[in-house]
Length: 146
Image 1 (cartoon, one colour):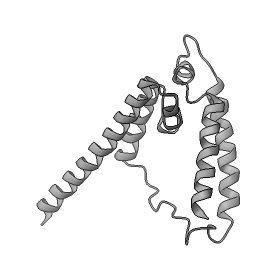
Image 2: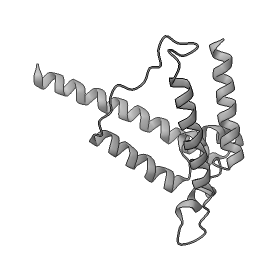
Image 3: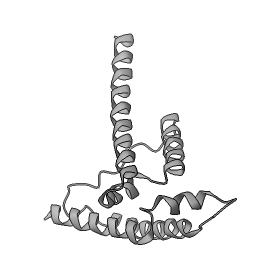
Image 4: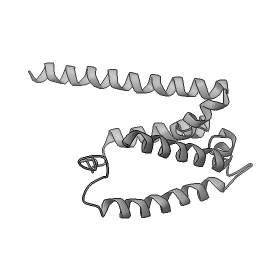
């Protein structure tokens, strides 16, 4: 029963991204272009997302456990460190330059646009390189401490 609900949530997400125009990089780039062709609609999409998320979290977390899992699997860490800040900066700069974020790019893959494909390939390469770098650094720290 869990898989059909995952597909349904993915479909709703993809439809929301498409209907809101967030799969269109020009709409996102125009939001950041406050001195030119500024388009404030992204702020309304974000505001709507924050409101729905706020209400959804309150409703879901009032339950003792999820419907299809043993626990909610919420993050344990709450600190703000250099890794979080650096990742946020890289995400924001990439989003502003390309006009895509991962959430908008994945549904946009269905358009067949080559720039979307290149963005997703670069995104995946970044994920792989980060994991390799983290593994290398943790191995190096382990060797230095051991």
